[in-house]
Length: 245
Image 1: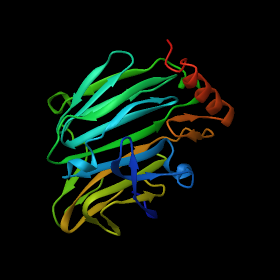
Image 2 (image 1 turned 90 degrees about the vertical axis):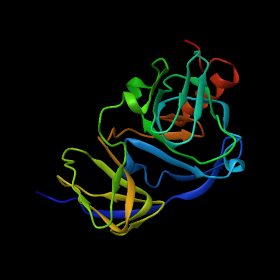
Image 3 (image 1 turned 30 degrees about the horizontal axis):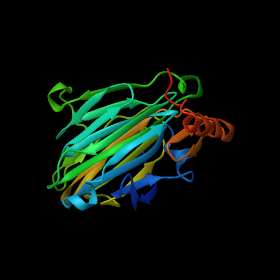
């Protein structure tokens, strides 16, 4: 069985988003060709309220969908459609921005650890302008499979990944092979990928997807296929039309 080989390592960069929320981010046009259908991965992790308490007040999106996964802490979602949801430890939120959504994501805590991830997924051109949708899944509602991978020191895991164009690992604690904390590894073609934890164990995310292969035009919260479509999204938002049904 052919083994996928590590081809590239990318270090997450410190950044700030929303109302001063400190994050670690992996994104950029230079990695889009090997990350397709994924666009961006953000990690929020802090024990200091000042790093996250400002949250992400109301802001727009168009043209993609998000998956938010909380490990520790509480995050409240609200949008213009009237959807409300509270993510707690182990919960997952899925939101399809489609033709337009205006939403907020606010911590419901003023102390303690907030730790979670948000993954942006590209939408094909034919699906970009569908109506926005939203759903929460709490830990007890999810199938009994791991959302992330946790291995003790020296342990290995070899998932079968035939047919996936994009395969990446993001280490958020410990070490696995050449990957250390806050690094993402991108892997080449193959039928399986073997992950072996370092001497202190490892916790990581495994991302695997089938490439869409369309042009990507991104400007802040809008992800479309062309610059012209980005300009239209900006105009629609300015005119109050972005989130119209």
